[in-house]
Image 1 (cartoon, rainbow, N blue to C red):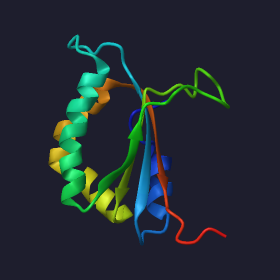
Image 2: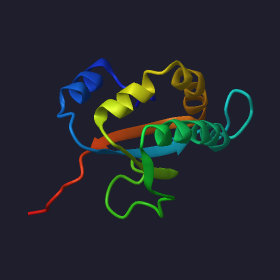
Image 3: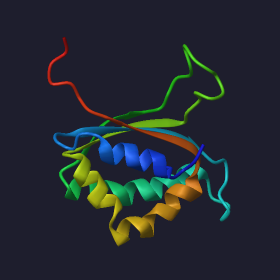
Image 4: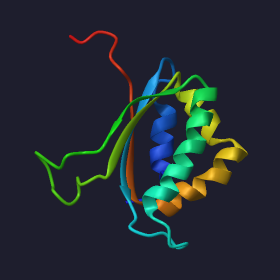
Amino acid sequence: MGIKPTKEQITAFLAAPSSGPIHMVNLLKFKAKTSSDTSGQASYNKYGENVLKMVQERGGKIVWHGKPMGVLIGDNDADAWDYIVIIEYPSRDAFIEMTSQPKYDEIHGDREQGLERTALIPTRPFDNVG
């Protein structure tokens, strides 16, 4: 499992409808230690502090975050995550614009250093369930 999207994943994301808000579900498993001998969580937290400013500058926000209590249904190893955060962006384009900035490239190293594995799942909230 990668830390960056594949070409196919980017292509599918860019082909999806672009109007309206999106929620990015971040499933995170931290490394025990990074190459600089800090915890993976500390490295990711540094990234998180910096990227949250960028998210907020574009009208985004944290919708929910928390520590999983374990796996009730699923694969205990593959589905074991250390932290989950859901970020709302006003649009897909706001997310793309943010991740295309040189500043994002500067801080992304802390994300890569801190994560053992991750899943980033773009979702679109329902206006009406039915």
